[in-house]
Length: 361
Ligand SMILES: Nc1ncnc2c1ncn2[C@@H]1O[C@H](COP(=O)(O)O)[C@@H](O)[C@H]1OP(=O)(O)O
Ligand SMILES: [Mg+2]
Ligand SMILES: [Mg+2]
Ligand SMILES: [Mg+2]
Image (tube, rainbow, N blue to C red; front, side):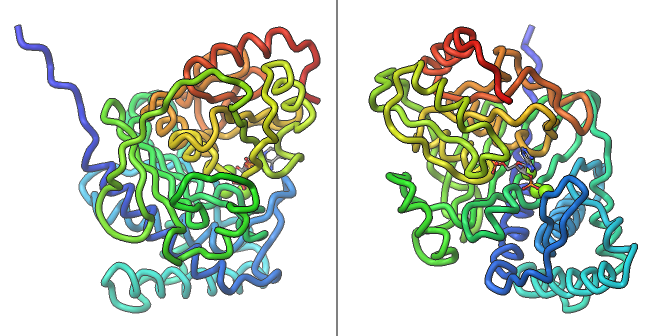
């Protein structure tokens, strides 16, 4: 008996790539003109900019335009509450609407002013799905690493697709990431100021069981370079990555882990899921995230990057080795932190975590 054909998600991958490219264009426009007044602070003290909202609206618009006949469910970070409450919020909503329309007319061959302010607020709120382990759900972080975005460092537009709780498509748009392998922290800092120029801006894309690919963010179609991780375990040569912000991941704990493994190179500190892309193309062999104890992870911070790492041949799990379960709603419950690495290094890393007694604070 012939076996059932396996499901592929090629059309959804193409649509996700187009949506991420469009939203990345909006982010690049805003980064050129960002002012403090266009940034608000949410109740968790994280910043949000007109670009976060605009990118969320554009991804929702683009996906629905390209797949009009499919039911649409999206789990996304932002909502329009703060844009409806105050005069200041309404002013931001008007700016976001103008920005979304400008980007659509410049990049997507649509007429100017094609979306009203209400349309844009509704698109932002279309990201309010609770997700879960049944059916299809898009998962979006319109800007991951907003602090990096504001600080002219790294950030990423991160879009994934869940099918029955498993990630089947993952796309990362990284406008400030160098297209060449990162050799040192200074090089990557410099690249962020050259966004939009030759050699800067990368898109990573993966489909389950079909591999992970990278290529220039500018341009069309699927990125062409397949990523396949090597697997050396020479810890004197291995470099690890972690958050730029020590508030987001415990740098003291990771330093202890690295010492236990015999890693001597200093860490590469980057904002956002750009780290997952950098791991998948071999810029570093380990990515460590140990948030402080009170922090609860959300699925949009890991869905797209996790598939890109796995399809490049890497491993990802929580700190106990348990797989990340993205099918439980908007939150991601896990043991202590999230680790990803090349396969042999990953095994040694889990062992080192067991042996290091002190827990992240
Ligand atoms: N207190 C916090 N601890 C850990 N992560 C945080 C905290 N506040 C925000 N984040 C999120 O951490 C991620 C950035 O990761 P990194 O530190 O690796 O750059 C982002 O998703 C960011 O949200 P946001 O998407 O709003 O930027
Ligand atoms: Mg945020
Ligand atoms: Mg995020
Ligand atoms: Mg975000």
